Image (cartoon, helix red, strand yellow):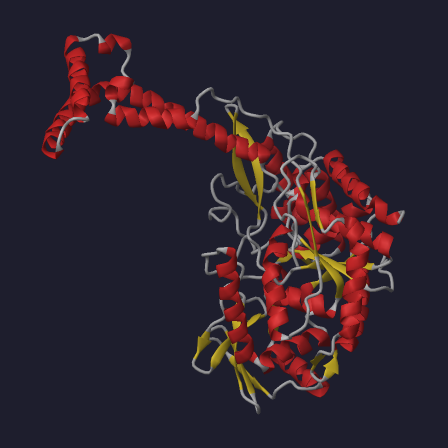
Length: 568
């Protein structure tokens, strides 16, 4: 699948929707026709049966999740249009996917399902906010939970029994890094840390952004936590309050955790099918990955995904695995026709099961995992592979997902030998109303050129009063004489001329130190300006830092783009 462009929009309020909305009905119909033709089987059951069962479960579970959050469980009994993201405080460009999902489903008669990627690990558990000191913009990180390496979102639980007693307790603010130590750790994730977020952010922001939705968001989080005492998952709070906010725009998307979806027999059948031929999958995965990187000119060993490993007869599977409360590990497997040995990480505990070849084997495997307390979750590649095959009529990606799923398409076509269903990409750019810094009059290239002259042509940068000194004037005249002789000189003569040039530079170089200091200061001022300008033009601030008016403007922009579908 090809796109015209997958670059973030430059202008405030601009959208990226590829393919355009008017093409979505045909894409959905084309994908549906493709799924009807496919003869793939997983655990000896046709894919079309798995799709029907997985969609039924997804709609039911998404409705139950809405009910747990105190929302109306409105998930239409229709095929599913799907998007997804981590339960973080993402930027408005990510939220645009949710708005597009709702608008498209209203027009196409599909069920909107947002997958909450709680199996992923948080990049940060701090809010990045702009701040201004002495008219200079910078960034402050404000933590609201302790980040633990490798721990998935689904393992972060907020303790809520101290909300009333300690609601005003102070929690630290880190100026440089979101992962520094040094603030109160009564628990890995205390509700107090989250509920003081707005106060601490307001202190950092001062009057910079007076109309953010953050105070209302945190207030709703407090009400949410009170309804779910004595403990509540952090992902539930962030995703639940975000979903409540969408109601004001008339959006009623279903919400489904990836961890919940992984309880389905469909996901276990998909996982079992990959494990059944794991050596073949690993070989094809790595071959296609190398070819993709070469074609795209990618040098990173982790982009779009890292290669899968092999150690003797052990193969790394494209899944995460861990036990309750533990960090994620890569799943390793040693599979023979008669038994499968699964291992948590490279040195972790092992479990032996019989090959999962049919529905009875699925039941045994599910019970064995439950008994051992193991959690098997997809990685980025296998999540979209599973969702696009087993659940979605069409998947809506952001820019990053849209780029890496070009590799997913290749693997799908190579491994299962079927055409890849088409997907869409949606994003947007909203900028905060931050004050623009004053633009310096200097041009970087000119400053750098003068810095080079300080070293190699000092006479070009010296002020007039220094150039008028007799010893300086003599050196400059002498250099010009040498330059006049250069073109007619032979190699030996040029060597001597070069020696004299160096001596003249050594005489004049100390006189440029003041000029050099001024140039360095100007370069630093220019660098500061560029740093502040990047903050002003940054599109990846958390959505809670925007005003309701700005977010509603984005909603209206999405509605305008999809309005044609309702009238077609």
